[in-house]
Amino acid sequence: MKTLTITRPDDWHLHVRNGAVLKTVLPHTAKQFARAIIMPNLKPPVTTVEQALAYREEILQAIPPGMDFKPLMTLYLTNSTTVEEIKKAVESDYVHAVKLYPAGATTNSDAGVANINALYPIFAAMEKYDLPLQVHGEVTNEACDIFDRERAFIESHLSAIHHNFPALRIIMEHLTTAEAVEFVQSTHANIAATITPQHLLFNRNALFAGGLRPHHYCLPILKREHHRLALVAAATSGNPKFFLGTDSAPHQTALKENACGCAGCYSANAALELYTEAFDRAEALDKLEGFASFYGADFYRLPRNTTTVTLEKSAWQVPESYQDNEVKITPLKAGETLSWKLL
Ligand code: DOR
Ligand code: ZN
Image 1 (spheres, rainbow, N blue to C red):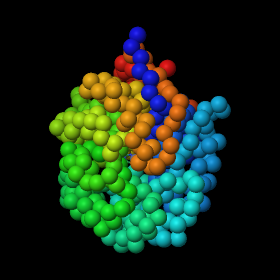
Image 2 (cartoon, helix red, strand yellow; image 1 turned 120 degrees about the vertical axis):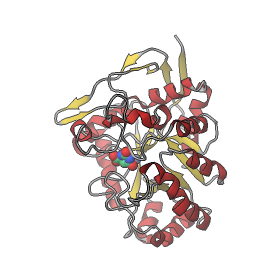
Image 3 (cartoon, protein in one colour; image 1 turned 60 degrees about the horizontal axis):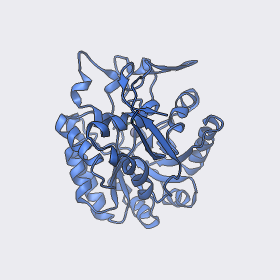
Image 4 (cartoon, rainbow, N blue to C red; image 1 turned 180 degrees about the vertical axis):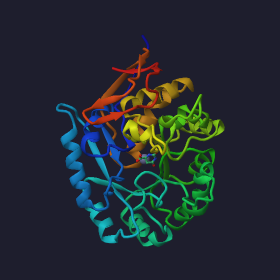
C-alpha cells in the first residue's frame, strides 16, 4: 500500500461558524490540522479583540478531548475599525491577521468595507506594526461580470494597496484566476496567497454538470479550466508564496439546496485528502508538504509543526452528509470516492 507521511499541516483559511455548527465541523479540522486561521464573518462579525478572544474560547470548548488544535484568530475590518483596535490586536497573543471583505462581496459581508481608500490609515498602522492583511479580492460592482471580479479587484485596489504599503504583508485569499497567480508571482515576498481544494479540483463546468450543483457554488466562483491549471501549477510549484487555505465554509444543506443557495463549499471533513488527490493527479506529491505544512507557517512567522500525519492510497467514500441534532451539512464530493485516506 502506498503511503505518504508529511509534517502535520495547518489550514490558513477556515470558517467554523459558532453554536451547533461549530460543534459539528470543528472535529473534522482538528483531526488533520494543528492550527487554523479562523475567519471572522460571524453574525455579528468579529470586529474587536475582545470578541475574538470570546470566540476563541467558544472554539476551544468545541475541541474534542485529547485533540491538539490551536485556533488562530482574525478581526473583521470595517470602515469603523480604529488604529487603537489594530494596536490591541498586535499586542494580543491570539489575533494573527485582519480580514478585508468588500461590503456585499460574499457571505456575511454586509458589514464589510464600503470604502477601501478610507482605510489607508489602518493599512499604515498594520504595516507599521506588521499585522498581516487578508483580502477577499473581488469587486462588488454589480456591473462587473462575476467571473471578472477577482481580476478587477487586483487592478482597481490590490495593486494600489501593495504600491502604497510595500512592507504590509498581504494574503490574497482563495485565488481563482491565472491573473491572480501572475500578480502574486510578480510581487515581492510580502504578498502570498491561499488556494482551496475546490479551485484545484474543479472548473466552472462543475457548477452545471448534469444540472445545477449548489455544493460547487462558492465565492470567488469557480473559473475556466485554464485558470484551474494555473492554480495547480502554482500550488505544486514549490513557490512558498502559495499555501493551503481550504475556505471550508459550512452551510446547512437546506440553505445550499435552495432557490437562493448560500456560497461556500464544505471541505473540512476531507481537506487534506482532497489536496493530496489534486497533487497526486499533478504528479507532485513531493510538493505537498511545503504547500500544506511549511509555507503558511513561515509567512505568518509561526513555528512549523513538528509531528506528522500519514495518508494511505486507499479508496473510500465521502459521506452524503454530516448530521448532528439540528445540523445537516453536505460536504464537497458527497457520496463520491476519494483515493487517499488519512490514517
Ligand atoms: O464561498 C464562500 N463562502 N466565500 C466566502 O468568501 C465566504 C464563505 C462563507 O463564509 O460562507
Ligand atoms: Zn472564506
